[in-house]
Length: 293
Image (cartoon, rainbow, N blue to C red; front, side, top):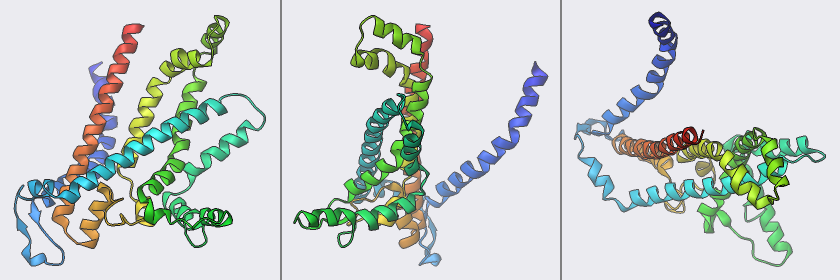
């Protein structure tokens, strides 16, 4: 047994080394750069300042606005996609003519590159001069709206919801298809209606699928960059700037490597807090499941 265990560890060693190289080494470099005052426009003034800048950034009002934008963006997209994905999964789980075609069409937005979908929404739908929404408003004699300028965060949330709802739908649909239909039929024979079936059978069964989907989608939305870059560039002002785009601005627009690295460290801390929360929820769900069985 000991030999088998050691051989198994030996087989996983290349994967562990690869993960360390692509994750931990960049993190250590980021941590080191965050301890320096280093602007690429003035490389001769590079100086080791340790943790001097960390509290300064926490006192910056713009930093907390960026944090709030990140939280609002993540919470809005995840909540809306959960509701829409649940509804679509329940609908396409039922047999009806053309179900395969409908499923394929609903999955399509998730297969489009984020920057491509952002360009489509920006130019085809949201453009105030020749966009589809502007044409519909003009058809009814209404002023053409400039949604990206007047409602930037709502516009980005709309694009991301359109992109990520198929992901949520696929995971929940997989959970629905693993549901024991005998339990559903037995509940129906006992007089359970649709709401009772959903609340007492379907939703508890989908709990783990929902938790996994929320965790994965939250991590992806936390690092969202492409849609913001293409549509609003973080504006107007910093109304749509999240942590990922703030890091880009500091590093590649202001060439401030030190402060960009500090923002990167704070982004990692925020992501770890979210992951820790979801891991605790998953562990609690597993322990409750074991206790029930």
